[in-house]
Amino acid sequence: MMNIKKSLLCVAAGAVFSLSAVAAETTIRVATWLPPTNPQNAIVWPTWKQWVEEATEGRVEVIIENYTSHPKTIFDAVEDGVYDAGFTVNAYLPGRFKLSSVAEIPGEITDAETGSVALWRTYKDYFESANEYEGLHLLALFVHGPGQLHTKFPVNAISDLKGKKMRVGGGLINDLAERLEVTPVSASAPKSYEMMQQGVVDGTFLPAQEQKFFRLSEVSTDLTLFPKGLYTTAFSIVINPEVFESLSKKDQQAIMKASGEKLSRLSGAAWGQADINGVLEAKEKGVNVVILSEDDQRVKDLDKLAEGIDQIWVDSVADRDVDAEAALAGFRKYVTDINSKK
Image 1 (cartoon, one colour):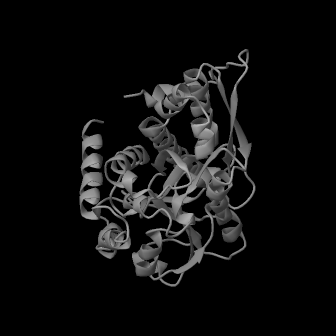
Image 2: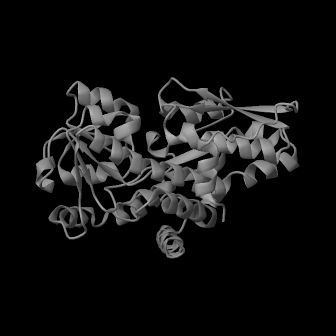
């Protein structure tokens, strides 16, 4: 198992390996759509770049480029060859990537690293044969930390959310939002700041890190933290299959050795660590940070509202050629096994 903390510290210190003296045979242009300070750009992509360039002995160069269109179009941009690789939220394309939503069921995970590794293993064991990624080559899967409540009002009871306008990003959080009786407003995560600032919404569902990276500490009065969050979100990291297949078998194997579970773990760990920084940022900016315990009535009420959402996921993938019940049990077992080794 790779030493995630060591990897993060190395990148943070700027110890990124360079093979500039070697002429690359192939350049992989990666599309990214989040702020430079987001862990995907500050840690994950630089580390993966290092891994790939080292593993291919400089034959493959990775270049990170800013993507300015809606993140939901990244899959198309990669599939069409506009970019060679990229990542985005699976739920931004409803109906295409349904299987990975197993990781989005409320109350299943406590941290992003565990959820990311469990999701990758579940994909390899149960989902890969369903071929949801036709037209793309999957490099990794990950989830962000548990989604929390960023609001412009205090949440003293779950009923305080009733009728409030809340930004949602898609996936199983939409089912939970309906049960919470909020007024859902669909938008991508980066729109949260603007929408809260302008009063379009009263709050947003996002991990705690966005108090810092999306600057939600400037537009939130309250950050309410549930032990396992309200949900999480699945992301895919993909590469154009023609680009991948154009590489030598040796370099294909090298890239996959730097990807798969290794990249999934790194992504989850980096995003999870960022949640701590988000909470610190919120406190420094004067946001009312409320950390709930398992026996808090708000947590109990949320757990009750979330009952049965696992079955909603099972039913939603009935059109896929998978054993959904077995996959869900497998995902839960992976989460338990991973947590037991920490």
